[in-house]
Length: 507
Image (cartoon, rainbow, N blue to C red; front, side):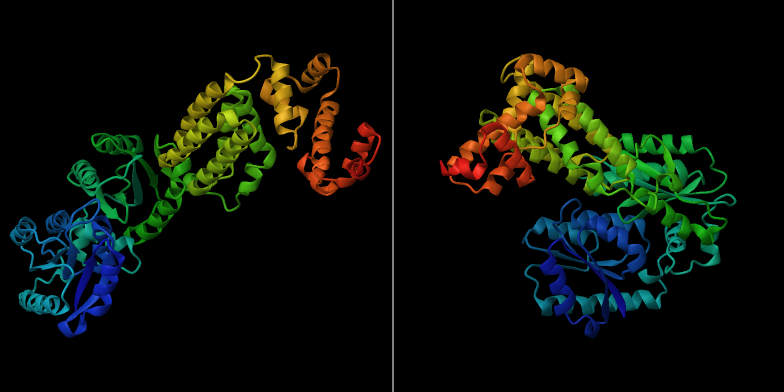
């Protein structure tokens, strides 16, 4: 049986081709399916296809570009059958000029495809008789390394190992993740790989390879200058306007240990969101500890409340301090990228939603800023996200600051009247206002004639009276005005009104 890879970005087409066509009757078996050109390139070393059935139009890399890449990297290359939804002569001309075995229009006619497969089989039979089947592709340095990196890979012959031309052990595998705020197309990634090959393969200092969505580099003990390696990678990436994160796996005593070095590098690279990208990180340093602090402990209710208060007051410094402190706590907890972004997004959207509810005049601004927060999902480092959020909260604070009185105590009173139902504490407000809590309490008493807690209780009781007059039940009123304990609410209400809440409602 010859091996075939199906490459199409449409799931229904992929599944249809895989299951409907009588592959075995035509002498083939489906070895792999790929969703686009980059996915196909990463799977070829393991799938070893004799034939690739590819779609012309795919995101990132077209089918014709994929053909060109494969034909440049493999000798002999797999054969190709090209599928297209467009009866375009120019596509057909280019495909046939690149030695495609067939060009079939979508929707694919099964009989037409099976006829093409039988013709391809004759060509492959001839190749095999001449000893040049793609399944036995030439052992390039990259293919040899990829086989060593895979515990299930085909063992390379002795002469292939000799082509690696690396120095002595120990060896290490260095994984490189290309990064950008926008999607990186296949052509750009290939360009970076070519530059790295010029810097390392050509001089025998290392072997460059592609593996899934990463680039990699196998280094020997002779290449010990990691700052030099870092500079070469940075140069190759900067010429394409890209950033990167690189992690070096554990050292291997021999070529047989490269797969373990790769696994350790992969584990370290999982934490790339927390790394700065300013150097090559050893896998042990990059990897997360076994136990991590829960996300809930990092962003508790009291912490999120500080953001709301800072924005409500228009205090840019306090809001920025909240962002930086929260980011530091997330880094210490080794939270993953999805968790970090989700936690930040939830905190900001919740704070802005509350602010919009309590200050209707800020509705449009709050919604616009909420949209800006979500745009920051493209940040690929925690440090970059922190910087972007710090700049954004400064804009928010500046935008919100123009509303209300300029007097700090008046601002504090307005804040209490808007947020009385929350768990307000003098200590939290003092941090937002930039005062010592004891000093802020004295200022507040001088300004209002009452302590902070007494003033808050009176505001809550006034609101409670309005709700009781509307017919709400006592426990509902208690909850709405900020008292979680109904008995405590009873005591406070009687203290200020001289009667119980139930008696007041019956008046």
